[in-house]
Image 1 (cartoon, rainbow, N blue to C red):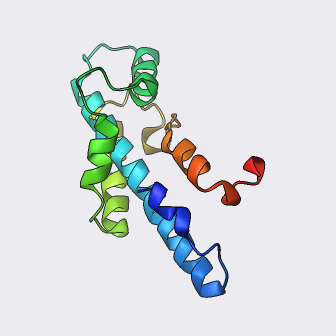
Image 2: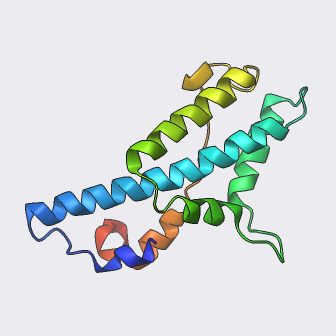
Length: 139
């Protein structure tokens, strides 16, 4: 998906820029939505007495560790399943996943839905590799 963006028009006109912004917004929303769907699944499967720091470490590791041999990347599978979803719907899903997780395990989300935590968007490296002209540090 990100590789396909490498043929963008580079914002030659204001209409092109608007389309590029919409595409980037949709892609980033998809990436976040996939992560929050998996976060909800992780939270649901944690033992009741799991320490918040242990849960946070598991969340970060789930995002950065490569898929095990013989298994597909779970984040990529969820991301692919979202490719036809509307951006607004995905934003609602994100809100729903965060609300559910925060309300069902308040000890892991002491600030409720405003609790800060890490989301690793490793797909950004793919974007940097294929869209070098859009990242000032790469040219």
